Amino acid sequence: MQLPPTLTAAIAALLEGMPRQDLVAAAQKQSAGYRQGATSSAIVTPAQAAAYAVARMPATYAACAAVFARLAEVLPDFAPATLLDIGAGTGAASWAAVMQWPGIEAVTMLDHNPALRALARKLADGGPLAAAEIVSADLTIEKPEADLVVASYVLAELPPEKAAAVAADLWQSAAGALGLIEPGTPDGFARIRAARAALIASGAHVAAPCTHDNDCPMSGKDWCHFSQRLPRSRDHMLLKGAHVPFEDERYAYVVATHKKVSSGARILAAVLEAKPGLTFKLCDEKGVRAQTVASRDKGEYRRVRKRGWGDLF
Image (spheres, rainbow, N blue to C red):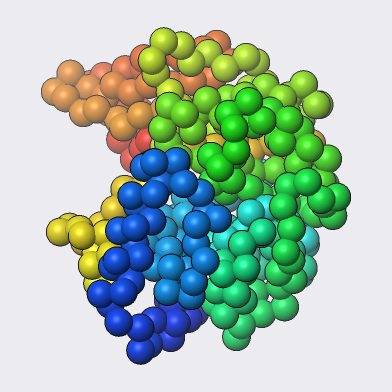
């Protein structure tokens, strides 16, 4: 999952003249802060914002792009003209949305952090988001309506018990669809699960990843999450202290729509291949279950072998 060339060029221009050791120090400080419960409010300088963009924007973009692709798959006629990006930060979700739906005409990004808003503006200028309105705001304001509303990695910065109420509030602004994306951790999934229940109670239908509106069947210590691989740039590897040229971003999400979608079952884990056949975990209206396709069933085996974690079955 590559960043758009325009965005890659904008990030490169942003980094011109910035000492890499300052960016590394800023990235390390941010990572330590997040492990201790800090939020994006701790980003206050241009160097800190730039470090955040290099270290986190590619993964955020990749997760959002994957989610939007799933929505487009189950609702191919969905063509949003307006976008509301809540807690936009660097604007990664907005970039992913306009790449998926180039027909988006109006984009509004809301964020309370001035350093991130300034960075989002610099990255947007000259690209498909040049006309985007970037507004200083938090979740408490009255939000405009939009065809597509997205909040990526926003609920994680709130107390867990607020996830349901925030989701229900954001749903009121979604004329077509609402996408919520969170880290693919047990805590991230718990927030998504609470948000999902609140959305269904508000009259929404789940378009993805679930293929039903029943209660979430996940139980025990298991949690619903997905993975998106993305390449690392040289600067990304430097700031992350990484030694491999790719990163796997684990994320949890839910997309709610006004229109009910019927789309079969979702593959919830990597497909395991062995001599007897393929084994994978499925979720549909009947619940979570293991599915096996025997290698002797050549036609079905070839079809399923092309499917992966997160795909429809």
